[in-house]
Image (cartoon, rainbow, N blue to C red; front, side):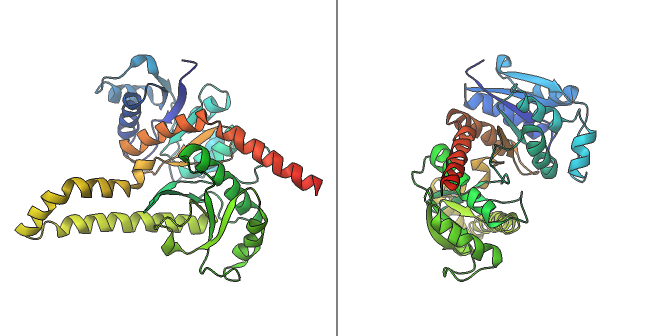
Length: 342
């Protein structure tokens, strides 16, 4: 068990709990022999769902948590008051080293607060950003931040660029990833006060491959590997991305059913089209890691089905094997050392 990546999964989080978290955990165990899963939640409900499946019982354990933090609850109060909730209990396991990572579809606010309070930020990290992988024409890009820090400063965005570069290089495998800041034009003088204050700092940052500004329309084309913005902009981009993607897929399917000719054509192109549409399905890339913490915390959509939860669990393997938290800590320590020597 020492060689396994131990993931604590919030079995009570999300719109479809415990059905989808349990199925996602079982599917992850079937997909990789390197995973051990703790399903944290109301034991009777979790075990009732588990009874539907065959799975390696030596790689799964149910951890009872009697409480659930609901989406509408104030996150700080909920973390303090509900010590036996699935979120608090699982995050505490991560803090104690009993689990290597935490995956949840539950309350975003509670996961963000709990991650920073219970797991803790790496020394030197000013803010921890949420950073999902989004599909593009060239593969995937990292959108950082998409929901954790609405009111960010230029120094925060510079750290997001550095942290995102480490993640893309060592988890996704993209050498010297291209970094761009979201802007309303390509010209350096454009943008709001935050973008204008951040741009020159990114230009001076020698440890990233900064390529300048990126407009929202160029993100799906894959012009940058790390897309930097504050959380308000990032969340709007992410939600619009998902909405447009879902609508286009629906309209393509609808169009193929309009006539006998289109139905015959659909049968001929179905295998290739299915693979193409799958590559633009955000759920295939797992959830959004809360980067900059001492251990991995992954937040998935509240509406996540088993496939997204499974992929979120599986992405923990690469995160641990590449020791991403330690790489971030070392990078920031080097930066601070350079600043002191200037």
